[in-house]
Image (cartoon, rainbow, N blue to C red; front, side, top):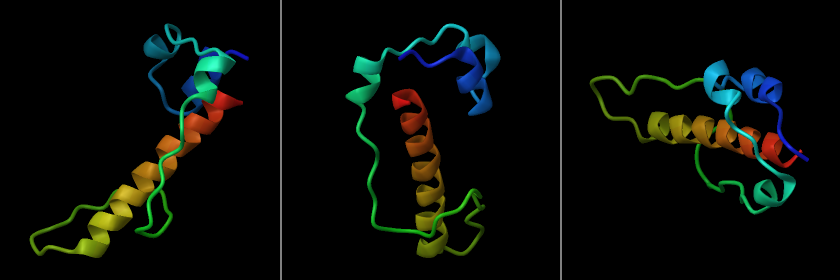
Amino acid sequence: MATTAKQLIELGVVPEVAKRITTTGAAAASIAPLTGAFGTPGNAIVAVGASFSQTTLNNNFRALEDKINAIIAALKA
């Protein structure tokens, strides 16, 4: 099943780019989700600030991982 431009736009892909992307079910099925054992699930990417915080960095990576996995799942659907 091909991913439609509308589905990609709903995920936040720029419309001009989404219209040029087509993914077949076979190609999408070969994309493995990212796995990580760190951070707290969430939607925010937070500025690290002047003082280093490993927790903030881990949470940022987790938020990115979750979004990438959502895109992968949408491509597979």
